[in-house]
Length: 441
Image (cartoon, rainbow, N blue to C red; front, side, top):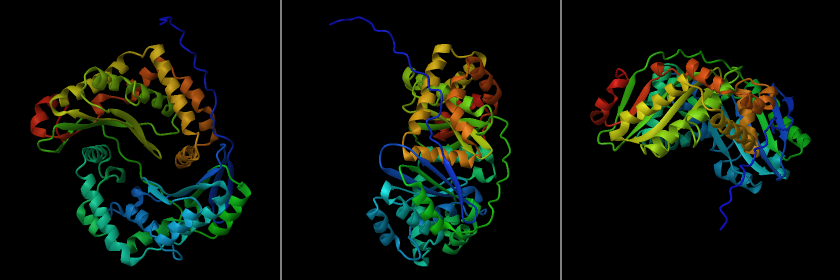
């Protein structure tokens, strides 16, 4: 067998966004439609995005937005849930309803020739949802079961505690409801919330894939014209967490500790946001990131550590999350913080950074290769008020990041002294290990 070595292949630089041209139209009462014809598979993804999310619900009604999502799955004034599902299935699609802090998204994906008819069905869900009073108890019971389940999951508990420490009483700081809140949710509150916020300039129609754009616009005009609604208000900017504390969420006898560590960083649209995505991938956001290689591959403390940047309009945070064995809880935190400090004290090697840059730019291209990926990107651009230059220049901006840039970003934005540390686990077993990292909240 030959043992000859071969030269490493060169990766062809990616210089521009793969996202095709967008057609943007205004329908009826200020509804913006964004259409992207792309791909070779005869499939179209359709989304109706409404500016109504968890940050918009009244105080004391956490998960009211989730109740709204459940009601939207109950059908329309003309078709109950079963009839609606059957009608959409005949077109080759299924109904999906999801949301975040600022949006509710109603979507489907169908064969291209059925896109106009599918759009009309989605519009009927958005404009004339059923809201049957008879479903209220069942839907509340479903929410309570979900709350009970996620309330036992360490990852959810760590996420909720971290958001609470980072944002306090701001709407972004409340992730899990109290049982009494769910019991108090009503059909009337859900219907009022949706009716008040859905319509007009609060609505975006997005279609991507292969489709007849004129037929889509005709269907959209027919089904969405005249749908008005209140202007979407803004959520006040949150204050900033400025000191490191350790917050425990007790799980007596736990064999693992679930960690979440991080702090706020600039939001999308800031000149440093794209370079921060490169920093994140190098530090903890990819399989070959420094934290992963350290606490997973080298030391075996954890199986799946991961860092990410989570964003909202005008706001974002960086966080590292990991499930670690209880007896190395303190050691894992120390290694995570040491990797951050190492990046702050010395710039990465050119070869290391080049591999990360290829990963980030390549991942961006791959994400735009399907209708769903394109729609995700369109939602991101719209939510953060970004124009087409963000897409067109993304790969070039990634490739411009230098080792010195990464070190500067770490020094400017990733200060371990300001990072809250959440530990979900057995406090009695880990408190001594963790004491060095800060006062207990």
